[in-house]
Image (cartoon, rainbow, N blue to C red):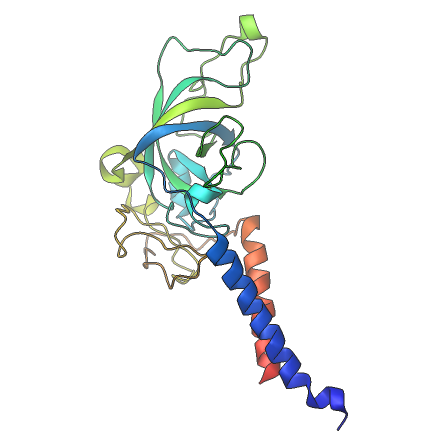
Length: 264
């Protein structure tokens, strides 16, 4: 038998070890942001199709109510679910960041959102890390799913006559962690709670009322800290559309399994 063939198991085991070390390096080097219950953050907005199942795997009906993506390092994972999934925040608009001069609305508007998605690390607003803020000097960014049938079209104030446009893009906001059951409108609809039923608890996690307790709060998919709590519900529709940010993690897992199986 050729020497290269004899060494194949050892080579493949080395690949396994490298992949494991690569995952370990990524997880141990991740410094998630430990944010306070009250503070300030930027707010942007993005398009989330109705009934779309985002990173956390929350039910399609959750999109019928106000939801948002949280910046990655506060979300607590670089793919799929993280400790931020399911948490509810009351967000209050303060003033615009990019306009000159800043726009201060006459009326203070607030909205309570549930976190169902992550805003990937990068860009100007979701780029904050534990030792570097985003472009506005803040550690958190909420990317509001907007437009939405659950949010009035005029939620964001504007002054088109003065600025010449209506969408300011980025707002400074104050945030407050609040109980979902008392504040998020979707809590009154069982179909909007929990995560999709056709995926295992290792794939999705969307608690109705996360408190930080291990039994009701998601772990970090990136950190591989075991399985998250099973938040699947019978009310969930059999739909699952993974967010693009999940693919790198899946590819890494497939490569790991392939290499280790070949080594056996």
